[in-house]
Length: 172
Image 1 (cartoon, helix red, strand yellow):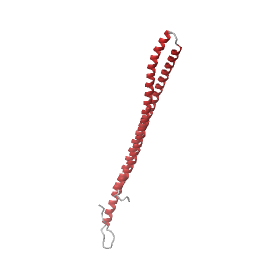
Image 2 (cartoon, helix red, strand yellow):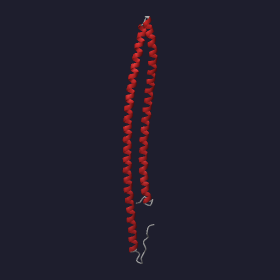
Image 3 (tube, one colour):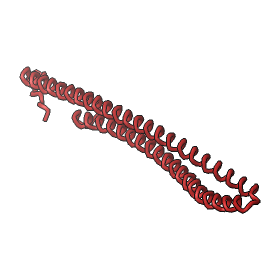
Image 4 (cartoon, helix red, strand yellow):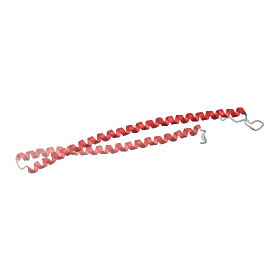
């Protein structure tokens, strides 16, 4: 409660009431300054935390992109090698008119089928990795947006705390 000035006979506030009011005013100013300093420290801690998390997200994104890039390259090379085997086997089958060549062609056809299955598996794995990369990028965007929202909500919360400390009338 605020101290009230006591009117003297001449209509001016008493000296002791004025001194009490000044002390209360100084106390309120000290509390407001302490709240402001606390808010600045909290904001700095939050900014540091946000910066660390963004750094971690960027680092994870870089590692993921590197890993996916290596895996994609490996799968593409495997698929290319499997296609060469298949093409070579197909050429041998076309050229083979002798029994030995025919037997080799049949064996190659079996190998080609196996290689084709592997190539299809590689293509499926590549598609899965691309989908995972898209999901990871979407999750990174969502995490960034959530972090930004936390920052916005946090800054609004600091203002609300100051308004309450100020008496709620917004006039400091």
